[in-house]
Length: 283
Ligand code: PAF
Image 1: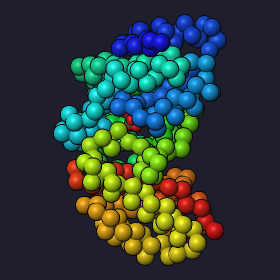
Image 2: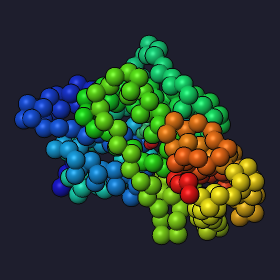
Image 3: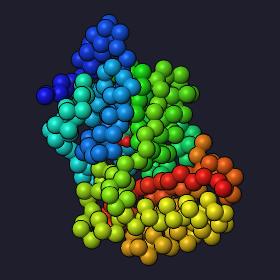
Image 4: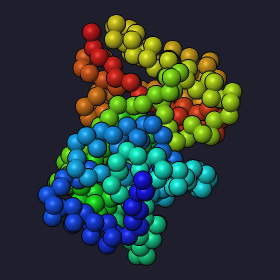
């Protein structure tokens, strides 16, 4: 089973136009490659809903605010394609940097509100880079449906907001975080963890679930978050960038659990930054 790969917008549009003539609806799963079960679950969800599924693979330089993070990002196109083919993926769109950002490119999409705070505060320019490339991928593919993982919960809200604001005719579907057996959220960055770090990593997810349970039972928000941060450090993490409770809708900061909420965190284990989030339901 081989998977067709296209690298230019022209080839992509020609293929999609052929599908459209046959009356097909089209889904897109945007990725930066280094595919794991989390990505594959998005492709499976897309496969159920759409006649044709495009996976995009583009390591987007505009969303990296650190040159060594960009150069060290795993690039595994051949094995990615081998994972996608058996799932019935119809097309892999893997453009080069010049195809997405040709010389003279000078547009920036910036989403206010949901981009602020959390990862937005710690990775300047990151969400502008995500919003710009995702807008391009939506316009280039012309897909009807797009699939994103809830692990990058703030990213999902940014994408939903830009689609609403720019009237892009695409439905954004959020899919649940896929976890390893020990609870660690799957991420392309997990490959950077050393063996001892990999053993410590799942403790952050356990702490998140524990904090979420305590909040749901009515524990005071500020104190519970402070003890959660300390627990993450005690578990061997080097730095907690944030552990915050936000409204599930709109991501506004909340200090009382009076509506469905998200507990979101980012923390460093050595050189690796791990993000995760869990839903928190009021009693
Ligand atoms: O989540 C990712 O892998 C990336 O941020 C995305 C959505 C593919 C944009 O580059």
